[in-house]
Length: 125
Image 1 (cartoon, rainbow, N blue to C red):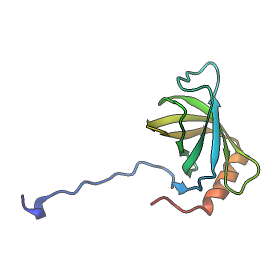
Image 2: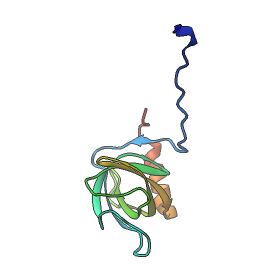
Image 3: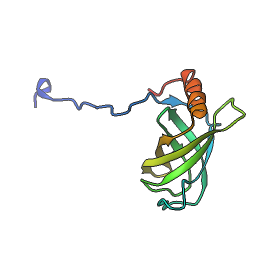
């Protein structure tokens, strides 16, 4: 086949927010959102935030979670002494020891703290 006729794949980015790198000291803990909602994974767990955006994050954890699990998060951002709470997060994808969550509900103070942190964090390439 002639190289001029080859079509290179096009990647369409569906993310709404810029992802930022965080240090490996960015820890979190999670628990089921509410007893009435389905949570097929571990009752609670801990993990490391690998990248972060205003809309969600990628987590490394040995805890077993499933896509669709609803959880509350407590994130300790690097350099912060007060943890940031996410009232409701949904697991959107999972692969091995990693999973991604979407932040569905969090307080205004927490949103502001997260935005300030992300304003100075390096973007993921």
